[in-house]
Image 1 (tube, one colour):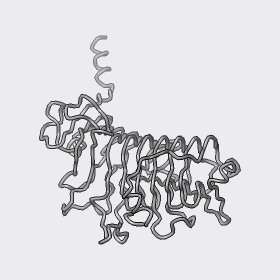
Image 2 (tube, one colour; image 1 turned 60 degrees about the vertical axis):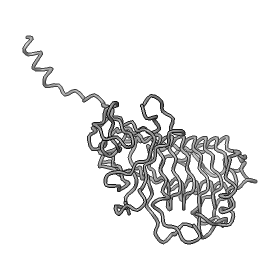
Image 3 (cartoon, helix red, strand yellow; image 1 turned 90 degrees about the vertical axis):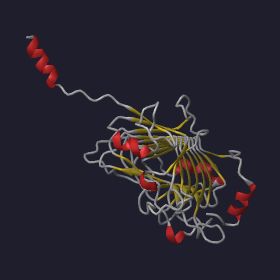
Length: 338
């Protein structure tokens, strides 16, 4: 009987325990806390589904300075913002930048900062800086050269993924592209072209059964550019561009968009809009781009409940009192530096 029990137990498959990997700029170890890897790509090559990767503050350039970090499996969690000893974590103080190394010949071209595999669902990217400035091209005036746009740094199109506590800045296209089931929470997104967050229906996960909406919650999104049609109500220049799928937009600051806070490219019956603050969007706060446009600006916020959202409440126009550098605001007002 005992022998039969041992045989049965030996045939049962138990999931492997999640492991923790550690990364610190300048290190050349084996990924342990005492002897960390020197770049997150090394941990991503060793990790398995469900593992956690902890990254200390610093600048990281990827394998061969290629500025691409690939999520190889589902449920991989990347946490930035640690001090050098991994005793404390504060992503807003210990800036952990995944970036392109100026002068590197291995420019990522059409590759996003975060590469993906067939199934990377349930993963988490938390506490990093994605600054595209070193990868962008600029003209003599210092303005962005739009003839050589760089790719969207984060294209996240499988459910269960969390993008939290990140800084995403200076993107020459969308900062973030998402699908249903993705959560985007407590990020700072500044200086994007076209839209900061683009929401589309569908998924790339095979046999996906997700029924949960995407969630965009408690983010600050500022200065989304439309280089050619600012203030005209065009589709671009919106903090959020919505093209379908279940979505909850809640508790965000959506400010200084060249056109809208939210651009709707389709019917909004699957979209919930709650407790958001709109400020100084040049054309309107919400615009539905249908043949006869529906426009909600500062003076008509009371009409939001007539647009046809799944739910709408608590949205306001108010000054969030963000501290903005005077010289940068001067460039923005003159349409320079996009």
